[in-house]
Image (cartoon, rainbow, N blue to C red; front, side, top):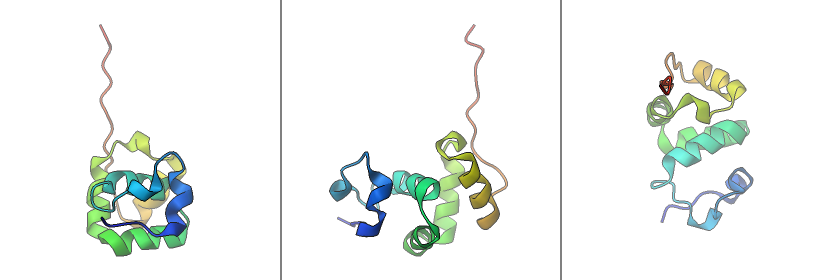
Length: 92
């Protein structure tokens, strides 16, 4: 199992941190670090997965998973011009 650094534990308060796997839980890890991490956590994210892999994953995750201020910053840092927004139906 690919475990995460203990310094990331506060960002996963609602998960069993000991069971998180950096490969299997990649999207959840990316979402939580982008939303709640500090600069050093973001650096770990890019070191762990690579800038292109992080960017590719962010582009497939629903934009509503990210806090608005985090979305703005990550779009600048990773040059993301398009986010994935779900279409809303009228329900009729």
